[in-house]
Amino acid sequence: MSFLFNHFDDMFKIYWRDTSWRNNNKDNQDRTLEDYTINSWGVILEPYWDFQKADPFDSMTCNFTMTFSEPYKIGLLVKKSDKIFMDVREAFKNGTVNYTGIFLGNKTEHRLTNFATNTKLTLIFDWKNPVMANFRWVSKNMYWVMIGIIITQFCMLILRGIGLLPLWILIEYLQLVSFMPIYNFRLIPYLYDAFKPALVSHMIIFDETPFYKKLDDDFFNKNYEYYWLSVGRLLQSFVFMCLILFGLVFAHFCTCCCNRMKLGSPTHVARIGRCN
Image 1 (cartoon, rainbow, N blue to C red):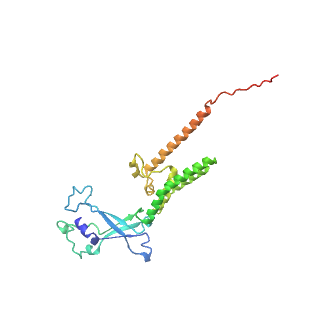
Image 2 (tube, rainbow, N blue to C red):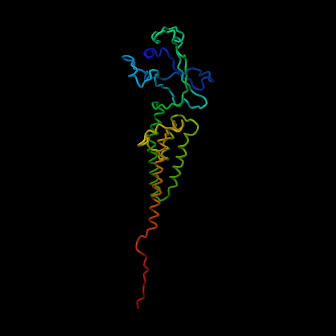
Image 3 (cartoon, rainbow, N blue to C red):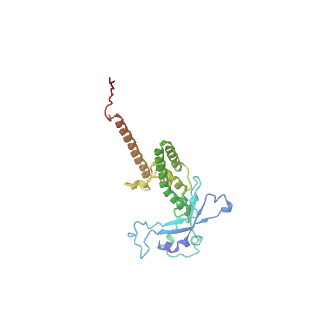
C-alpha cells in the first residue's frame, strides 16, 4: 500500500466509456473523469503498518470517489451498460520503467493477477452536481408546498360548503403519479426527486422513520432504492392510514351515538280552548 500511495497515478489509468462507444466512430474515445479522490488506502501508512490498529480496514481495498461531468446521463439503459475501466499503464506493464518496492521478497515469485479490469456503472445520484442538487432542493421544499395546498383546499371547500370531491381527485392523481418511478424502467436520476413530493398523498412525510430508523436501509428492489422508497417510509404510510381510518370510524361512531340519543324535552301538544 505504501508503494501504491506513492505511485498510484503512475501505475493506473482510469477512464469510462458510454454505450455508444463501439457504434459512434466520431465519439470512439475513452472518456476521462472530471476528478477522483482517494478516501482510504485500506491501512495505516504512517508511521508504520499496524494491521491491528488499521481495523476496520481490510488492508486490500482502496476507496475513492469519482466525479463525472454529467453523472445523470450514466446508467440509464437496461440492456447496455456504461462502464468504468482501470488499466495498468503500458510503461509499468511492459517493465520499461523500474518500479522498486512493489513486491516484498523474491520478485520472480510475484505478479499482478491482471492488467485491466472494468465494472458496470449504475445510476449515479451525485447531489454535489449543480443540476441534481437544484432538483433535490426543490424536492425538499415541495413537500411542504404540497401539504399547504392540500390543507388550504380542504379549508376553503369546507368553508364554502362545496364538497371535498376536488380534493379527493387531486390526491388520487398524486397517488397515481407517485407510483411511476417504481415501474420497470429507469428515469434520469434527478427526475426521481421531481416525483418524490407526490408521496405526500400517501402520508409519507418524514425522510427518516421516527422511532425505528433501521427500516430506512431496506428496499423491496432496486427501483424502490432509486426512488428512496424504503420499507420504513412505507411503514409511515401504513401507520398514518391506520390513524386516519381510526379517526373516520370514531367520527361515524360519535355521529351514530348522537343520532340515537334523546336530546331535549318531549314534545307537548298545546291545547288551546275557546274562551266564551
